[in-house]
Amino acid sequence: DTAVSQTPKYLVTQMGNDKSIKCEQNLGHDTMYWYKQDSKKFLKIMFSYNNKELIINETVPNRFSPKSPDKAHLNLHINSLELGDSAVYFCASSQETLEGYTFGSGTRLTVV
Amino acid sequence: GENVEQHPSTLSVQEGDSAVIKCTYSDSASNYFPWYKQELGKGPQLIIDIRSNVGEKKDQRIAVTLNKTAKHFSLHITETQPEDSAVYFCAAQSGGSYIPTFGRGTSLIVHP
Image 1 (cartoon, rainbow over the protein chains, first blue to last red):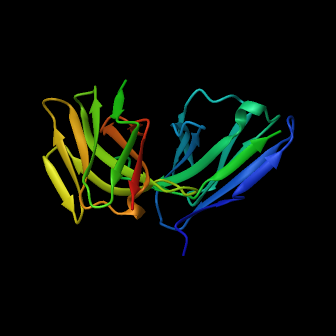
Image 2: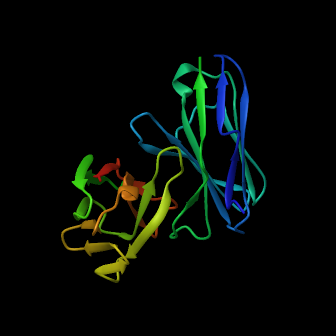
Image 3: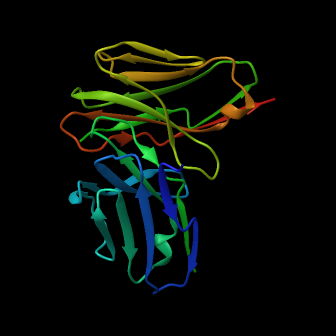
């Protein structure tokens, strides 16, 4: 009964490729997020959706495009992958904006 | 915007000792302070949170204290065990913000 599930867990790809990461939550939460964690463990917000509406877009390159088909899903598509995109990407959800997050287990993206 | 400083970046203790991680924040409007534990290869997990209307909260071996005047809050872990070894993140969030500001993390190592 995974609360927030991400697929795939590992993704190794070449520069210039396009890839997608999927996220689904079964908690009934209204808000979902994408975070990027770099090699120094810093958590950086990328996007936030509330009931399928984009509410946060933090200076992320246009190559990154989130899509929320419904409030239980938030996918991340990345075009023209670059070496600097290598990181762990976490999906998360919360019921309200002033509540704690439930994170997924992460997708480790390696661009070679 | 909010700025959260977290110290120390690494903390090494012997099993059974106490561990304290400290965070300071800059925005006096912040009123929600969650703590997350991230084990190796997993996503961050909410372990305790505190709101600005209380000064202390305890849950078994972990406790969090908040000093609004000084704008700092701390995580206390008593009787540490090897399974407490992880990276711990503090965060601060105000009601006017959709997302929290995270500290840079503390790597806690508990030696058996």
